[in-house]
Image (tube, rainbow, N blue to C red):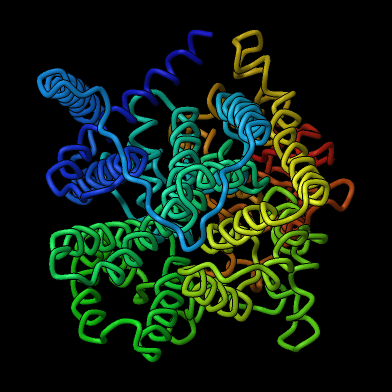
Amino acid sequence: MVNTLHSLISFMAIALTAWGLGYPLVRRWAISGEDALSRQAWSFAIGLITAGTLLTGLGLIGCLDLVLIRVLTVAGCGWALGQIWRQRCRRIGTGTISLGSEIVPVSHNVAGPPNWWQQGLFLACLFALAGSMVSALSPATAGDALCYHLELPKQFLQAEAILFVPWHDNATFPLLTEIWFAWGMALEGAVTAQLIHWGLGVLFAMAVMSLARDLLGRDWAVTAGAIALLIPAVSNQMTSPLNDIALAAFTTLGLIAWRRYLLEGEPDKRTARRTWILRAGLAAGAALAIKYVALIFVVALALATAWRVLRRQVEWSTVARGAVVVFAIAFLIASAWYIRAAWHRGNPVYPFFASLAGNANGPDTIRESKRPLGWNAADLAGAPWHLTMKPDAFGGRGHQLGCLFLATLPGVLFARRLRGLGFLLIFAACYFMIWFALRQNLRFLLPAVPVLILAATWLLVETCRFAALPALITRGMIAGALALMALLPLYRARKHVAVALGVESRATFLQREEPTYLAAQFALQQLPRAACILSQDYRMYYFPCPVTRENIWRRETGYQQGLDGMEASAKLRTAGFSHVLLAESLDGETHFNATLSKLIAQAEKDAPETVTPVLEYESAAIGGHRRRYRLIELH
């Protein structure tokens, strides 16, 4: 329980510091009529951007010191508490209790949702947030997290600098989210990093509510925010230190800011336009610093804006001025990551388009296996069905969007026109087409999901025009789907409750749930500090020594060519490896390239004195699938 409290306190310190950094800027450039929820969302977002940019700068100059990060966090908490106190004194002095908000008019006069609907959504969100929080309070076991989302921040903190890791494809990605994770790890550890991504999921829901409020009003915006939290992909990602929810949160904020900039056309709203374009630049810069997928968002938004220009709904000069400002701010925030990639890889978006940039050994990222659906009318028309009913082919069930959109979106064709939704639907369509052509992974669709949420919510609003019985049936069916989605996080949390409450130790949990943990613990207790492992598994975080992925080293060096088992140990030792970790799937659940396994097996047969097995065990940690691991010492 002490560990859990430590994680929660560290997370709250980070959230408080982020809010304290962002709130003064939001208040300084206040926008008339902006509701309190939007102000708070932007305060957290701008604070995270500010803190992440500061930590990035410290890392690039080699000053990513644990003590310095903790001191700055304590100072940030003190500053934030001062802001809260001054805000309270200001309210008392003016005789007001709340900041208040204006209701943005919508294009139709509609009734708000019934009480039973609002109360049910509150309970559903409470269940979903509680379930995802419990899972986030357990040690990290997600494969990608242990490969680089946590592994790279760990190495940065150990080196006190954002260093280049040559045998790691992800080392030169945009890593702003990972810098936030490093912040959490500097205060406590990986669990705090998971809680940061959980908090970014809440920020995503707040952003969706802010977007929906502009079109649907405050009451129905709550429904949109609740749907955002209940989407299985969102509630699942909130339990792991990944970066897709972080990206979706900032692309949604960028979409809000850019849309409002285009709408604020009256001369008396010049200040509001200036504020919105500054916010758009900050959000775009953060998104581009989080993940390359943000480039798809930028292109799709540009195409949707061009459509508005062609229809003369906005002046091209307005768009051009705004685009220049957004580019300038985004460049200041995100350019360091792209310059770093270009410096080390010769390609600012490595490993994508590696062949065009001269990276002959780069991984093949845009390949047929990543596009299950072909570029034809039948597959394009059937995409919503396939994405909903067959998520395993598009990144796995953990990233599924649920059945709500498939069930409700056809009804949008028969709904009344909602002013402002057309621009967003065109943006989503452009985004989907680019996504469809490049890499069909469900989690990469998350930046367009807020538009789908708005469309589904608008269909719910339209049920107000139905007769009483049809409206009740329609809302009841949708409520049932949302209830099932709310139960998923609780179901996932069942195996995390004991460790989250401190009944089970984190080490015991990891022994059961993380397949490489036993090897990592053996390395910690038995191997020398100078050990270096070549591993067939891509999970690295829990190892105390350097671990290199065998598939990347093989691709970059071709070490296996002309090599037999008798020479294998000597060559690997010459390359700096003291041990190899072999992984084998016993039930065909995954495929490990057998090149290294065959070389070691041949060495054990022909020259047994060159290799010594020091650990062998089987694990069924990943969904009950059995794997065998062998740790071999090289002589």
